Image 1 (cartoon, rainbow over the protein chains, first blue to last red):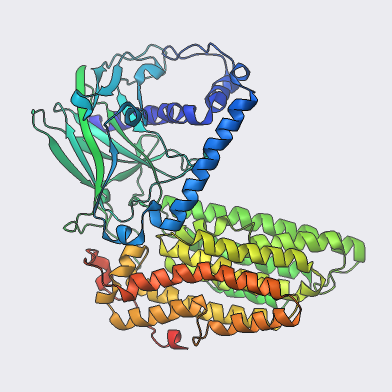
Image 2: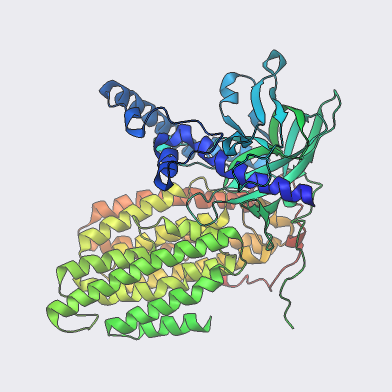
Length: 303
Length: 319
């Protein structure tokens, strides 16, 4: 119970800080810096001092802008071709027949660049987290040390979390794109952990609305062994939380607009952790018939 | 629900701007709780989006009626004489209906609401703005309306091409049909009404058929043939009717509109919109392909679909 509360409390921080980190390379320094500057110049103990101001980062060269325009137009052309081909860029028969799909796999540095890692260093904690390619470039290794020492700023009560989150998809001209996973009903993870419990978070669309802190979470318990584990988590098991607090009014996750997926560790145990991920995929498990695992009764029954 | 009927009645029977606006507001407010009934975050987001867009449109409409009243001294809907008011009113009605380029809210709102509410949004909520458009059509700028209509048909067809969610597909089909309705409104408003009635009838039957099998996405549609085969065949016919294929009913409005446009020496427009509705035809055909023509190698494992929620209305699609 306390573990869940801590995990979720840390997930709030992790969620909030992760968002800035995840979108920073995409939206430029405009978004995050303006947020920090508009309140006060107090800097949290763990965050980096700003070396360059926002306006110094702007590059007004003509050649670079032509290249950027060319890249964006190329992406737009590809998007148009994908639109004509069918759902998600593949033909309709492919969409009709697919039962599994690999969404993220880790075979090169580019695959690693699609992920962002963060830890409680942002709030002044002392955990460390690193992400690198595993042996033979076949896996990704997320490792580090968890340290639950609370930063002494007078307002933080818990600390000690590390996380890894996928960057959201970006289309041409920096538009948001989403994953459409409506054909599937489980998440399929091939991981090799060290026995520690992790939390899997899925973030669906709403960035610019009141629901921007909504996150769907579930737990992933790893075994420690040298053998690979294939963990299947059905989407019906994910519960809704907002800013780290589990909501009373639970709803199933809607799979037609998924933005990112993340893993968090925050189990209040000081020490090293390791998670090796081979790939993250989706599965349409025909044997799974549950629609939603929580609150299946009628909440306001007619009298 | 009653408030919806009340609001629609008030707007339809009004000839004063304020009553028309009041009816529209009643409609907007009445449908907000219907959209957010399930309290899912997406439903609430859809309700918020709907409210914001409709409130903007209502404000614009009130503004246009006020400037018209200021310049001409009367509040009669049919006597819209001030040109800026006409422009503002066109924009307001376009936002209310979901004509391009003000269509962005429509698929999202339809996706966030349940199937029956989506039905109401597509048919009942379109009726009052259409009546206002009919009453004022003689004073509105025909070029602007035609441009918006052509863009709507184009966009409705293009964006609907690879959607996998049935509600979004129906949203884009609605946008496309609105384009057909709007293009003829300045020349022959009766055809607009005819198109609207036939479109409402066809969409109602599609939504109700989908509601009874609870198909929210394409893969569910593909497996519905095992649950209610008769419904599936009639669904196919209705979809093709929506696409406007002769000899089904949906061809009638298209034929008459093209005939009227040709009489008005607008043959290029007529050709353009017929070509653009080919795009729509493509995705309707794809829907029918998915639902009836092919038999997918799987069967859905959703328990809910085995229960038919209401008696199947196989008669309406055969109209």
